[in-house]
Length: 81
Length: 437
Image 1 (cartoon, helix red, strand yellow):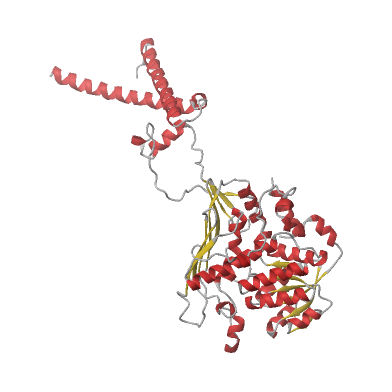
Image 2: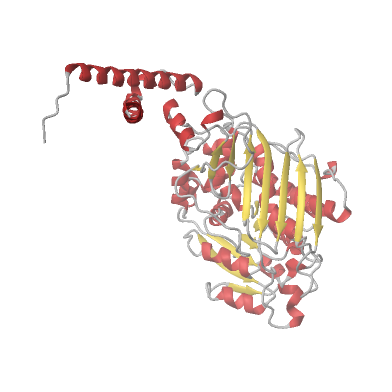
């Protein structure tokens, strides 16, 4: 088994992706506040929900990227043949 | 529930301070009256010792201020049953002899309907204080006769409308008058049973005497025996009297086995001057819905029987994001967040009602004799106190009078198949029960 090295660039990229997910989740929260006419303080009180949602969105991006990676690997190996 | 508990219930209702000014008849069982009658005895005679008479005896036995000095019934087995509870009471088979008894200050009349008016009139003439079971009388004319004579004599007269003394009704009416359910827009009453309404008869010649409720010669059937209790809900909650009544009554089911001639299925609609309708329906061949008395308001509903209040205001649905998650869970994401539903099926809301007060006792209405904790004990106790004090409680007679009048009017409407209004000659002064706050 060999050591795995996560570079600073990768860490930074993943953090940016999660941060984007967190911002999107907050935008969803704000949208629901407007649509359901609930109080604005839910921007803060619903941060738990928002955080969970951001993690779920991040997990979705991981799955999407994995799919993209597998597809690319398959298509590039076919090209080599 | 004893009197202390009753008043404690009033306290729990938050009514203790001003309850007596809104519901003045409760003065007859207030702390002040209790102190006033302490150490004194109400000497009571009971006329009619059948099932309802015995039901009252069970309550009277618990009241230290009551001494039952005389019992009367022309059916010996009933008289003997009652005498077991009061061995020293004088026994009579003719009520007129009981009325001559100087050791009787007040009488409880629990006899068939057709006897209510003559017995009440005779008892008042004899100077007795009177409690008579509902309905007040067999005919509208007799109701008026009893009402007027009581007024002339200044007698004490209670009619057995026990809901006037039931804490949950008092609390509910107080909430209605405060506007907790908005404007009263409808009143629904129903009373369903599935039994033949018969008592066992030891020999055939006693059939009409024992099962008097089934024969129009003695009773007006479901309207006077059941509706009479519920009809006062309308005037009590709306604060006015019905303007007209229509109804339909038929013998639908209990026709095969007996010769009864009162309806076993009735429906009546009472319309108030403001257009609000009160309905009463009774069927005694299906009991699925039991007994119900519901005041429908523009902002909510109070179920008087179960003591629950239902709000028409939407229940809080949680935070916006929580509502979104719920909608996703429900699979209706497509039309929800940005548009909202424009139509919802008008089915009954599933939101549970909230109790209007703690420890509500629910009466199913199935008993043909009487129910516990429905105000029956309290009204008898109030009467016992009034026998001692000689004071007629305010308003209670007018409420009872009109409950009887409209029950009888609806019965007439059913028989004549017409829409009827109460004749002016039957109208007596009526001040609605309203919050003075």
